Length: 299
Image (tube, rainbow, N blue to C red; front, side):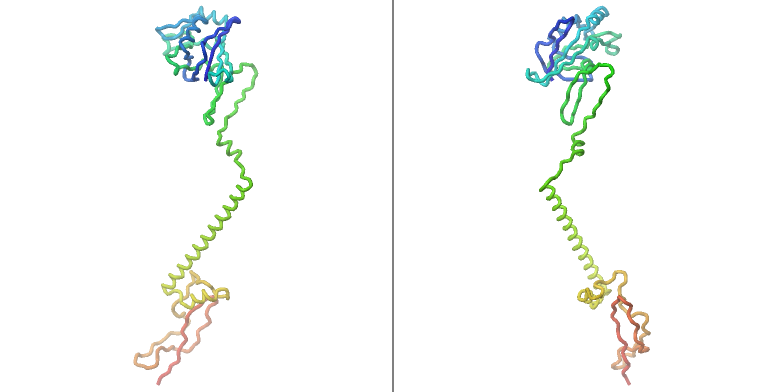
């Protein structure tokens, strides 16, 4: 930011800077840090004197009364650069903005002073809180932008504080709209992804069922006939898969009468049953291997 200053007293304008210079704005300090040449011009315009012992411009009661009566004003002209073509804005400060009191620990006793300090070098050129009494600063850090405007002291003006929204919030409130080929591409991508997921899920379930069936075969819980029926007769009303919770029993049901074995010395007789009672009908929906009773052939 580049600044230049002028003082107006009783209609007379006095230049307080030889040429514009860049400066900072800092609300943490009360002083105006200006070039030494500018401070000398302030001394001549306002009659202030530098006090070397306290390192400040002190103002006694007589000088203060004179300045309050004359009420000179200082105008700061601000711009983005020192170029003459750069747009500018004027911030006017009355003498009341410089009529300050220093208290302990700055001073031993309460003392009136003029908030002006000679800068040691160009990196110290700063406008402090004295300047901000008559101006307000708007800072937009996310957009790397700030602006300065003069305060309005008109009575009855309504306060109007407007929030500065983050660029991210503006993006969420007005998201970019997909149109044409972009929207069609998104839809096709979603459909293809959904079909791929469904196909992978189907293959996984089928492979898992196949592994369960192979394991049951290895344990002898599923017979070859059941497996063949499941594979060949699917769609003819026969169960294609074995119910995992109601597996067929590898032995005859308890409805068969007790079997008896024949002595090992008997030829041609393998197994006999106590009765030739025919087994009852199998329960619906179940497939079992059953052994028919044999007749007794012997002497």
